[in-house]
Image 1: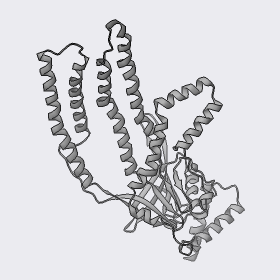
Image 2 (image 1 turned 180 degrees about the horizontal axis):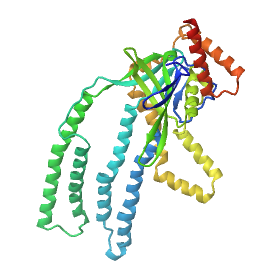
Image 3 (image 1 turned 90 degrees about the vertical axis):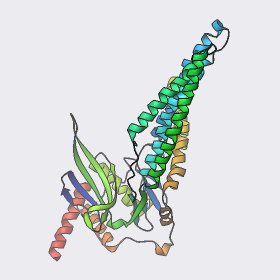
Image 4 (image 1 turned 45 degrees about the horizontal axis):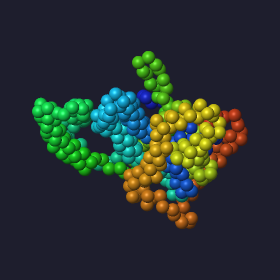
Length: 413
């Protein structure tokens, strides 16, 4: 493909933005918040709302605390005067129930988010080398573990749930246990121990073999000016709705098969105009530097959260501000932002291969790559077209550039 080329495919309509990443005339913006970090040397692209994922996981902690107070401690306090003592049975029952049955849901979401973060690594643009690094997964081997899968996890969880419930039932009794109850407690613990002897080695062994034979994260490094970038509009038909999906894709073509990619990344941009503006932010960073493109939103930093709290205190009424504080506590937003910063600053860099860190190291000024003469000539042509007809939209400008380029090639032929 060439910049400005329009293609019809089986899945939709494609507008090419590169090879030869020419100026588009669009304003450089970050409408889908794809820019994660940037400095004078490189810029990282990665989508996803990490704060929401952390809030959703921490919500289970708040639910456990609230129900322990309301269902466990409060009834015992109310009946304290009638009984003459504080009954620890209901609070312990609810607390242990949460430890084994509620909090695991939060932990599953937390660790699954970490896993998704590692399996959806960032894309890095290196402006001093004029290259792009796109991740892909290579190697690996499919290991089939008997009974492994979501069905096995659900079954193990249900078995543990019933066993733990059986262990917790005696905690509700305030009277001394008779012989039958003592036997019941003894055999419940025996069953619980047998389950651990079976399930823990099974899960540990399966995870070990899965990780040992899992695909490895690799990066494909490719020249910026040869990168294939395009916006694709796809028609999506649901049960009762017809929609259009617009994707911005960056791809490294396979030398052996130009119709396939060695590595690629895509993000939904909502509209073709937004996709071109998102692309222009990448192009401006590579051609003009970090000052020419939008800064990261930083909406997932602790500093942003503290600033939003200060603004809310100044701008909101007392009732609205108190309601916001209740929501902040329920979703544990302070801790959620702390976890998000840890993921951004610690977890993500550790999950990246060392070769990417080495590739990102600065190079001396005389070794820094420069724009090719072909690209500079194409940009001069684009600017001339814009001066001649300033009303052209970015889409029309790209298409006009493509037509003029192909016509010139035909004349040369």
